[in-house]
Image (cartoon, rainbow, N blue to C red; front, side, top):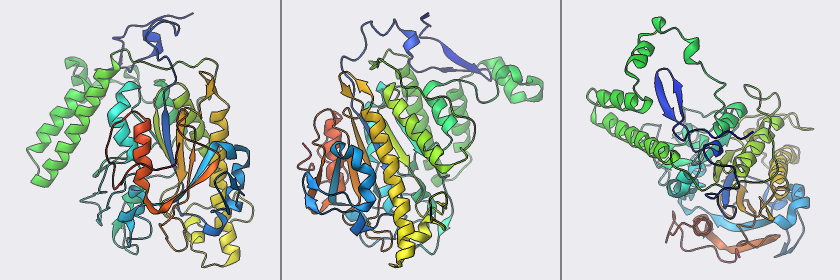
Length: 457
């Protein structure tokens, strides 16, 4: 039986109180007013590393009349739901290192500064975070960042002295701040539902063993107040450079405060009928890589289906990932190592099989989303999903004519089931500007865009 709970309900822990986001249980049943009258538009960006085999990616033919190449064969059952995008690239990666600067630029079009890590600068905010800044307060989660590889630190001296952090993130809140991605399925799942089943509870802790806990219980300070207090105190003890970093951190805290304030107000949510159930994953990383990826894809779908967020990114691997895909027949070796096949057909075929496997995962996502009905259309029709890489040819590090696929109808604004050839070296940011407009965000420019991408509709 439905039991409403107070909008003032808060999470209590360690003597502090943290407001919950807006929950359906804080309102009347879904038939009451206050819900959206039609489904919202969602957007997602799925990145696979190390590029493709160009001649086995780009098909012959034109418009709707084209044959799927070997790497695109997994799209056979969803061909009518995808658009192959051609001749898009990021000019700011021209002449740069093979991998590191190309990954952050993939969603921003910015010029990535060479650095060992102290002065990170990607030259721009990623498109997902730009959108989250505009509409992220309409859902419990402004955006959802997923991945399968841990973030890497250190410097790649062989690769030109770039910090490896650049290759670990496609979502950037600003040119200096990557958005951490969640790689543990259970933790990603719990972000959607705030189950409260992980982490120590106050009842399990003995305040006598922790003066800090005892102090928190006594003054009932909020978590954010404590963070601000400590950060401002620290500012008095550090140099100018660190003060600037702390200022950025405080700005992030203020952003969290605003989100919590917004979360206390009823939000217009889309409530889907029917069910799409994903059991809560077990702890840790799944035993197989395929299970790991599929769980993350299901969690993304669930986040969209429940209108918990409308913006998501998924990194299917970091730049130069050394993952061994030996669970696939005939594969043995580092993914990045195999990408440098030097046209050795035996090595190239292994590299191509790994890339094809990634296309299979995207086809799984597309098929899953088109099977879910909402408002008389599919979840896919009410979405825009971009899949691709920051390299066209992993062997040569070519960044022209990036391998890109766009799925979803954009709520009837995107013509599907064809290939769309833009003029040679069209800015990828032209696509992003077009997507911004479809998300209801008025903008004249994004990154190095020269206009919207013609021919999408």
